[in-house]
Length: 554
Image 1 (spheres, rainbow, N blue to C red):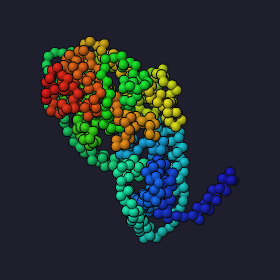
Image 2: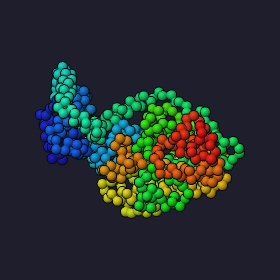
Image 3: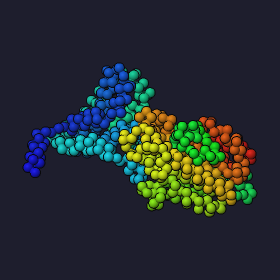
Image 4: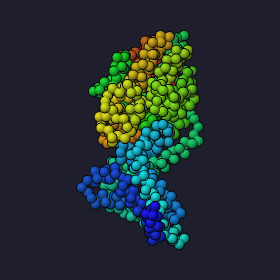
């Protein structure tokens, strides 16, 4: 006890002797973040400026000065500590994921964070993450809190930050102008460079996210396809139609054995008469972007959050045409896609077989689906939104008995697993999805009273350590093919093909052609013989494969 009192007494004496100006405290804090929270940024800079030490020094000096200019706006005695503490914590939080998983904290990633669930996000709060936050965030923040601010006159306190801002900007401009042509080329060609800078990148992302949400706050919903009507497939009394659209999660095409992968991850689907579309690209690299985009009428190039929020989607068009629509969710929600329809949530149930970890695996759909299929009396579209292969806890996405590929990584901290263990765990999730899809198809096929079909497409892919990247959500401009190349497959019953006049062999001819989420809106309308001016035949993979050509000739 006496030693503790002595230490506290000495710290008190030291604190009385030490005082620091707000600007100097800001400079030291930036220097700390610059040096310890930017490992990826420095790694990229060494690659970019290899052999050009003076150019590297000039650019880094400019970045430091630009950061100081921005931070100096808060370098007043009454704001400097709260601001710097928040920046230290932020940089520690984001740098962990950037340096260990290779992710980029941009606007889309912040959007993902804002719409995720507690159950999903808790897997990313690992012991390694907490330790990192304490060492590189909390402890420096405590030092900032402890250091006294040097007393200043009101004029000096008010003027110094402004002078610092002006001088810092001037220095940054001078350093950049010293080799502007090279720097401009680097920033143009290596967009991942500044995207890895902490805390600059997440701050810019947060500002862009706030602007996006502000712009969309008062948008009015625009109707889509109000002219929709059923074609000749609906003219006479028919067997009721049930189409199940399965929105997959984090499944990448490279790990489907249907696409030539060397591990048998699709043993059940390979036995069924499906059409596997092997060359399909996603609209985005994360659910918050891809899911609403793939159901919208917009192409990836035209889509934006504001457009998706303010425009009805393909489910609304089905509703306008008189179809029954329902959404079942075992993920983070429907992102307002099914806002005008009945929805059921499955991810927070207490089923001991499928929900033992506090989240539910996709087997939770099967028993309710069996009863639902038996209840269908009218033409229906049902969307199943899977948890699929969502990481990092792949081992929690399938039953223990389904751990076919071993040893499998059984932690959210990938650094504790070998690359093969991570891949094995992920492959187990794909094999489980294979099982769920196959069982669903068999249930649909067994009901002869309905005309049934199933279309499966994943929202985005996943990185498993290639090029140092893990998980998903990379900006599309730098996203690897593993995050954008997604599986898509189709199954149709005989009754469905007959009613909707679909030439299956004709559709199968497109199985290896370049397709994307851009095709989904238009192809679903064509597949279900829904006539509307919104359908673009050029993007409808069924347009040239109809024996009943009414929908094809619009």
